[in-house]
Every structure is written in structure tokens, then in C-alpha cells.
Length: 355
Image 1 (cartoon, rainbow, N blue to C red):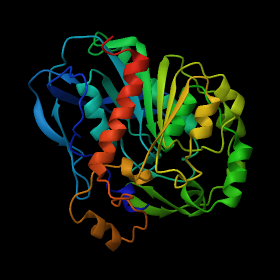
Image 2: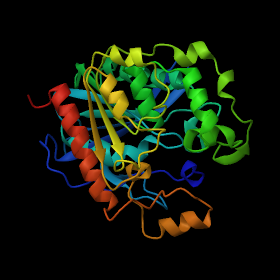
Image 3: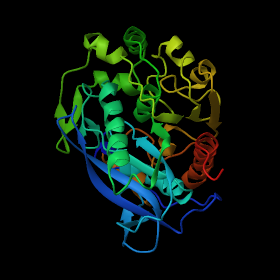
């Protein structure tokens, strides 16, 4: 999936009926200190807003449509649950804006970082398995927003959730208490030449928005202690996991010990969901796990709605993944509407919005 490393953005807000807390969605781009990284994180925050601010299309680019928001609009008075978001491998948090804006309208403050080392234009196979860095990023975002006087009055620190997609779903798994199994993951990639396993073996990455040749990743050479460590942040009260990565590589006992609601969502009909992300077994192991599948979709259906001509542009660049092609006859907007409903249902139930 090479071109996605360069172009990743957002879609127009989908139409979905939800409790409406705000007529407008505000958006701010902030920097968050990440001591473990030794650098600041670029973080986008969406929130229920009053009228005002600069109208922008967040992340609009050549391939994907942008989502409307109002930069630096005044925050509506209130006390709202916080949802932290984690994007997929080689993506950007802006690519989740189509969902983030709907959550903000429904009364959530939503915040997500661009994860260094696994973000569009800054993504290498060697950094991809370091999920402990992603969970640290998410915890740093929670630290910053709950401590900052400009945000903490608007955030209900007792009601914090996480939403993750793909590799971001793996990070959400781990910050909720799941622990990875390095040997299981390596055995899985011994027999699979697709998806993340192909990425590890491909010898290619992206640095400073340019493709670079890199060493292939031997999973058995990864720091086993770090890979399998507990990355639990007890402030997380609910997790939504969309096509979570490393699906074959979690320690079953760790899932059985997770005390919070875990809402698993797969993109695809029965029999079409890749082993890399299939999550029905993970949901069954989780004491408060639930499972849903979005029919006539695929993994890339989570990505933003594509502009006319985007599919042809991708072919010209040699892209082989169906980034702008969804399964069946459903439009991506229709798939997004169903996903939005599932995510909102999970978060409103578990974080008690409007109750």
C-alpha cells in the first residue's frame, strides 16, 4: 500500500441520526509532549463547538474528500467524555475525521496523534511492531488534555474511551489490557505473505515522505519483553476495535482479564475477513466483548471517501490494494454510516453519554 503513505485524508460527514450536542464541530491542532518519544506529538482534537472559527476541510487532498470543521471555534460549555483515536499503519489521524466529526456532534471530545514511525510519509517496518510506543502516545494525549486548563473543564476524566483501526486497533487492544505473544505472531508470519507480514518482508519504508530501502524485519529479533509487556492505561473505560491488527498474536489469558467493554468490529462478510484482523474469537475471550461485522465492505472501506478519478490515479502509481474500491454494491458513505452507528452505540452505552 505505497501511495497511502503519501495521500491520507478524510471524507465528508456521513448522514446519521444521533443525539446532537452541537451544531458545529470545532477542530484544533495541538502539540503534546511525549517524553518516551523525546519529541512532541502532532495531535488533532475535535469537539462540540459554538459558532465561530475558520471553516476548513480537514485533510482534503488529491485522493480523498475533506471533512468540514471550524478551526479554533469556541468550545461549548459542558463536561464531555474523551475518546482517543489511533490510526492505521501508514495512515494519519486526519483519515479518521469522517468518524471523529460525528462523535463530536454526539457530545464527545475526540483526540488522536499521528504516531511517529508508522504515519504517512514516516513509516518503516521496523517501527510497526512497537505497539508500546503507540500506547504511550495515547496515554500522553490523555495526560495533556486532562491536565490542561483549556481542556480539563470540558472533559469528563472518569469517562474515557479509545477507538482504533487496524494497527491502531492493536494499540487500542493493548491500552485496554491485552498482551501480545511474539512467538505466536512470528509463527503466523512464517506462513503468511500478506498484509503486515508482507510489509515486514518487503524491504521498503517511507522517511521524510520519500520511499527508502530498509532491512527486512525478523520478528524473532524484536525485544520480546517490550513486545509482550502490559501497556494498560486504567483510565480507559471502553474500547472500540475496528479490524484490529495482530489478531493472531494475543495472549488469551490477558483478554480474559480485561475488565472493560470491548466492542469489536470487522469489515467484511463472513468468510471474507482476513486472518490478520478477524476478531470474533477475540470478542469471545473478552468478558465484556461484543462483535459485529459490516457486510459488503473490506478493510479499506474504513478509509476516507475517494474523489472522482482517485482509483485511476492509484493504478497509475502502481497501487495494488483496493483503496478506492469497496466490496459489493454499497457506497463507502453507506458503509461509513453503518460504522458510525456501531461506534456511537458502543460509546454511548459504555460511557453513558446523555444518560
